[in-house]
Length: 535
Image (tube, rainbow, N blue to C red; front, side, top):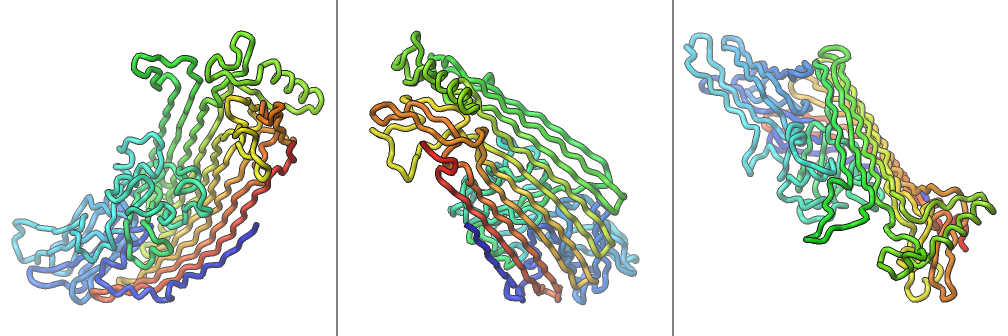
């Protein structure tokens, strides 16, 4: 079936966010800074406030308003930043090692000393965290920076391991809601499981390498109008960018059956099947043009071989009933079936015992950042994930009636061939581009475009061949072979296009944001039973 939906979110054409200054700074890709510049008594209008992102040389400048207040939006997350505050007749103040959090306004209040005074002590009041009742936050949130991400222990290397740091999160659920109610974005691009089957995010819950993330923000109940279109929590992540220094990292992890326990009390498990997982990756970033153009790239690969089905065919020395691992079909019978298929139809059904199942999850990301000028900054990011996970042959033969006595293809009465298994693929391809602009000290704009393609087909190692169940005289399966009956033509394909623009005006103690969002989605869902025929 084909379903096309057009969702126009001209989210009121006017977002009408009239609130205290910090409220309009709850972005999903950037941070901001706000505060006042004063002398010993009152605010200083016309003071110069300059923030420099030290790793990239990105510069943000603003002039304080009539009461000495300033707001800088659309700033890079992280840091460190160096701050310089100056005013004619006053001593310039400098502050270093300032770090910004994703979606949170950093509050910095500065008091300048005039040139005629003797400077004994300078006190600069800043706040990287905000009290519970604070207009600079739009709800309960947790921000995890890159250093914390790198230091956290994780086996799955999934974003879900990071979101657990939020007190209100329980696994993939936030605030007690179902994970399908949440919204997950990377660089403002939709990374939700748009079809809804499976894990909370695409690619089996691992759509992006955690080594490629700069910060993750988990918002339990955000009330910023720009974070809309969902009823649960919001998980917003931004990817890393290059800096003026070249840097590279690499890692390699491995696990096998030797790292897994083989004893339960005094009992030792015998006949342990091979298990092997290898996970490795590399990241590299640096300048193309210093202070102007930067790149960052990341690749990560996860290869795993896990045990297949554990039963073996019956033989004269180990007949059916010897133990639970011995299936009813004999090795001689199954070998005759395979030989007949190979000689008569040139079809290889695979093996029936002693095999492993392979899975993979391969990620790639590249990002470019361009400091066009002091007023305009542009970035573009491409990310892809290609993965597949193995599954045994389906036990169903719907719409036909079930097998006799509740028997199935995969219980101990039967032994199927390996090429009747299938793979569930989970692929994601995503683009995102963003232009951040400032116009003087009062106006700023964010223009963002994104594209996501979630493609989750099924695949098989079998060549095209009818699916066949061989039954005994009572209607109970003995063996099965052929192309898995529900795999051919099974697909889930969703494409999403989005354009967003937010224009913000800083008007004294209040900000007003005007914006709109256009989304266009196409969905394909294919399902066909017995597409290659059934016998």
